[in-house]
Length: 202
Image (cartoon, rainbow, N blue to C red; front, side, top):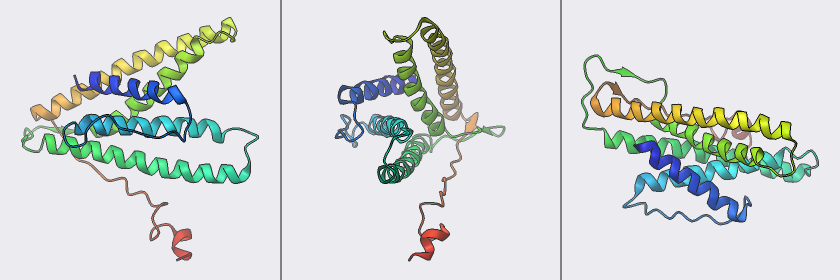
């Protein structure tokens, strides 16, 4: 199943990140873009999400220096753009893969594209990892551990359900029961022409 591979790669990325556990560590993709494109994209996607997860932790520090916070906000904005770009790259992969499939006359469209489901799955992997950390802390109270264990159980169930839904969607697309239609995000705030503040400074 596709999501077996995706979940395994996401776990590998998160564990790799936490070896050094800093947002400014170097990134190296172990998958060849030419021969392992899907794996390459999934690995890159998860790395972006993992770094941004920790950006979000840092910027919530009430003692953060305002200048550092502004710099970090710019990094988060850039990361969000990278995240969106990667989703579109992954959808492009699926569009190419299924380009010769003829949808059935009664085929329907899904509420989200496969890659936006993958985006949710990648974030869910981070939630599982960090909730597991909280559920196994040695310095936390019994009530904290129990509450986090309950949340972890829900997240694990959610991952099974989401994985099943994504795999079912891909099978339906391959069989012609569903068809893909991808809308670019068309984010406006990063565009010099579409953001009036940026446009006024040109």
